[in-house]
Image (cartoon, rainbow, N blue to C red; front, side, top):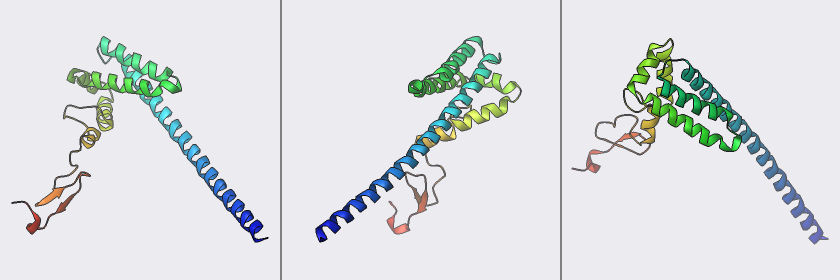
Length: 167
């Protein structure tokens, strides 16, 4: 009789564990779907803005064609090819706006200063060098080290006691 009770307890515990795991997987699936939808929406916004800039006549004709084509392909890409299309759109944006003449043309258009500032904040190189996100990827410190301090890989600084400093 005790063997039967232990088997029943084991089956109940396994059932509880499987139910808990199924709930976690369901919540994970919902989070993945929400994240995918957010990424798709962001890609469509980027591609729409890129198409508007490409057809606005602000850029030179070759840059406009390249930008419009990359944006159109990003908007029409199937789900399996969205990552590649987004990368190609990013490459086209970086290539076009790496030239100072293109940046100046966009700046002179109405709302251009805000567009350039937003693009620079999101990762496109600007006239002042790499953007904030590009500097973070290179591992440069985000703030200067404390006097007599050390900078760690996360960009944080701390004071080093005098007895432990080199030299």
